[in-house]
Image 1 (cartoon, one colour):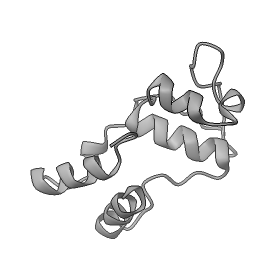
Image 2: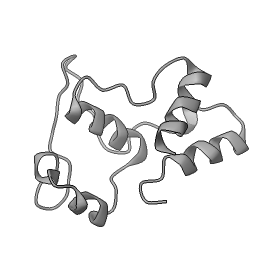
Image 3: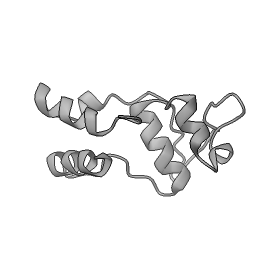
Length: 98
């Protein structure tokens, strides 16, 4: 479902929704738009400590282009069309723990 939601947005905009240059950048792209997942989701990952501190805050990261991504700073509604049904479908596809 996650991939389906990303593909829908890419088909609409012509650009990937989460275009990261590396594993860390990819995660930060996701956190920038969707915010942090629940502690349960974070702790279920085997390598969570590489991306989050002990308080489960994302570790600081600056990508190759010198951009620092911050959690919950990009509004997905500015990317999506003004269609409530489409937006709802995409957001349901992108739920961390549906």
